[in-house]
Each structure stands twice: as structure tokens, then as C-alpha cells.
Image (tube, rainbow, N blue to C red):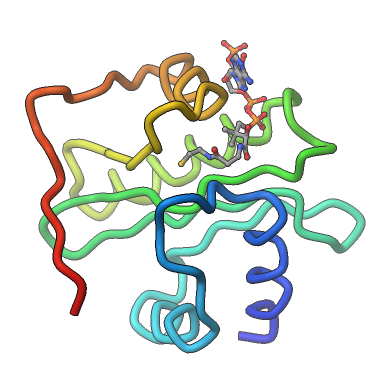
Length: 130
Ligand SMILES: CC(C)(COP(=O)(O)OP(=O)(O)OC[C@H]1O[C@@H](n2cnc3c(N)ncnc32)[C@H](O)[C@@H]1OP(=O)(O)O)[C@@H](O)C(=O)NCCC(=O)NCCS
């Protein structure tokens, strides 16, 4: 819980932030209350250098907020975070992992592809705000 302000500041700096609602302390705290192990953090010298949320709702596995500090990219941190998320989700029963990537996010798309993911072009996400 005490990491939440630092997490929000990190996501503001390092996350894919276009086209999505902003992050929120209350929502992040609610996630930790519901599923305390869902946020996986990479640290260096006591600071956050990477994150991923490995979300499991009992039915599907979704990854959110895969982000690496701009100064620490290209060193395998994103891959290690993703593998840690996959291990957690698999141990909970997941048979498939997914992530939303903004169209045109070439670094994000290249990273997911390098890690064995492919786009699922025959589906479109439909949304309505609460
Ligand atoms: C996407 C992101 C998390 C990758 O993190 P990273 O720590 O640099 O990734 P890694 O060093 O672990 O690289 C993992 C693989 O992706 C590839 N990759 C990563 N960034 C890449 C880029 N910009 N162009 C091409 N390939 C890339 C790497 O080559 C590597 O593959 P390899 O092991 O076969 O060489 C990072 O760029 C980031 O935080 N971007 C902003 C947030 C974002 O867009 N997140 C993804 C959308 S959900």
C-alpha cells in the first residue's frame, strides 16, 4: 500500500498512457486489497524500474501496466516481468494470457511479439463507461 504513490508516479512517467482513463490511488489500493500479489514490481536501488499487473478474475488472465523506466529499457526487464506474471497466472489456472496494446505503439507491439504474443485481429473490444 505504501508503494501506491510511487507506482502512480512511475506509471505516469513510464506507462502507455494514451487512450485510457488515468490511474487512481483508490482503484490501485482496491486492486491490492482484492489481490495483493497482482502487482509485480522490478526495483533497482530501492526505486521502481518496472511493473506489470498480472490480473486473474477466476476465469481469464489479463496483464496490465507492463512498463519499464525509459532509462532501463532494452535490458530484459520487461521480459522478466512478463515471465513472472505468466508464472503467477498459470499457477492460478490460466490457459491463455493477454494484454491490450494501443495501435501504433511500435515498441509495445515489438516487445509482445518478441515474447511470443500475436494480435487477435478478429476481435474488437467494446466498451461503455460506468
Ligand atoms: C514495452 C516495454 C515494457 C519493453 O520493456 P523492456 O524492458 O525494454 O523490454 P525487454 O528489454 O525485456 O525486451 C523484451 C523483448 O522485446 C523486444 N523489444 C523491446 N522493446 C523493443 C523495441 N522498442 N523495438 C523492438 N523490439 C523491442 C526486445 O528485443 C526483446 O526481445 P529479445 O529478448 O528477443 O531481444 C517498454 O518499452 C515500455 O515500458 N514501454 C512503454 C509502456 C508500454 O508501451 N507497454 C506495453 C504496452 S501494454
